[in-house]
Length: 305
Image (tube, rainbow, N blue to C red; front, side, top):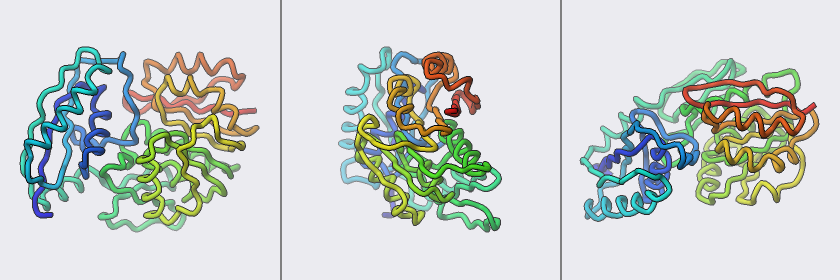
């Protein structure tokens, strides 16, 4: 493919990641958000509309009829609009870009990133010489939305690294809302004995499985679209990078899966909603969480006695 089109959507900040996910469903082979990659899909809260607008750029192989593609994209945005009061979708625009320009553009956005003393996330095109005890994950941008650059994913990766670099690393791991699979893959790369990764979106599970194959850990991870409430067993580390409201709704099920002495990591939480999540989980006798922040996001780490 020598030519692509770059489709640009100007949307409210709270709509941007949902728009990116829809563009991927329509065949985009890469999505950027104002020079920042759209990471593991976290649906925005419709009640959190803000005035800030962002440019979502999606890259498609150049179609025979670009106007038809733009029309289809606009129609999907119109279908989304009722969930975001006050948003009136604009007609998207596009430009033609050469293959080499697009490829080089990706390389500018996604450098190799060291998450912790040992954990490293790198794109396939970058040469990297690991240290003897480094844990290296290879994730490329595109429809997977998961290179670890988004605040919520970075916070969760740091929590995974801290758990496995502790004196008592987890043996069994549950990744709720796995998205690109990066958290489950990190756990597998660290040597977890059993990993279950669930997501209600079959496409997300398929992408996560492909990323697991890329990292040669697919045999270590069980991917499933089964709801959390239907899963069985207890886990030493439970990861939930989902909405604040979803963390609260699933609290009973999350705690039911958490083994004695286990760690529960909650993220996908806007800082202004941190308090309501803490209040909801106070009822479970876990004590005060360890709290970390990245950009506008919060991550809560609970430990079961």
